[in-house]
Length: 168
Image 1 (tube, rainbow, N blue to C red):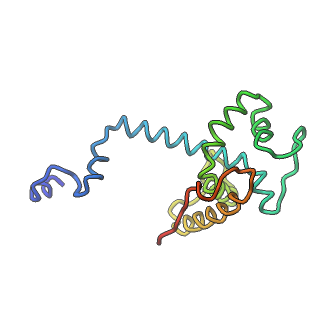
Image 2: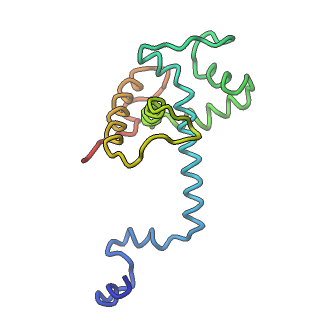
Image 3: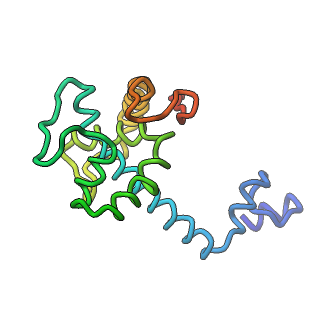
C-alpha cells in the first residue's frame, strides 16, 4: 500500500476521502460506536419479541392471553415483561418500544426468521453466509412494513418507516 501511495504521490490509504476519514478514526471511537450499535440492536430485538403477540395475531395464529392480561396493549405487554414493575415498564416503553417504531418491521422480520430457524437471542443459528437469506429477510421486512403501518397498535406511519430495497 505504501509503495502504491508513493507512486501516486499521496499519503492517503484510499482514493475516496470518505474512506480515509473512517481509516483515521481512533480505535476508542470505533469501540464506543460498536458498543452503542450492539446496545441498539439488542433493544430492537427486545422490541420485536415484545410485539410477538400482535404479529402472531396478524399472521392468523393468536397467542392465548396470560393470566392477568385482558388484552395485548403496549402497556400490558410492557408490564407483563417486567413483572408488573411500573418503572421498568415505563422505561421499556420510552427507551425501547418508541424508538423502535421506524424499524420495527425489520426487527420483526429478523425475529421471525430467527424463530423459523429455532434460534433465541443468545444464540445465532442463521447462516450469515447465505446471501439468499438476506434477500428473503428484506422481502419479509417489506411485507411486515405494510402490515405494521396499517395496524394502529404499532403507531407508525408508512412514511416514517425505514424503507429497504434489495439490490442483487
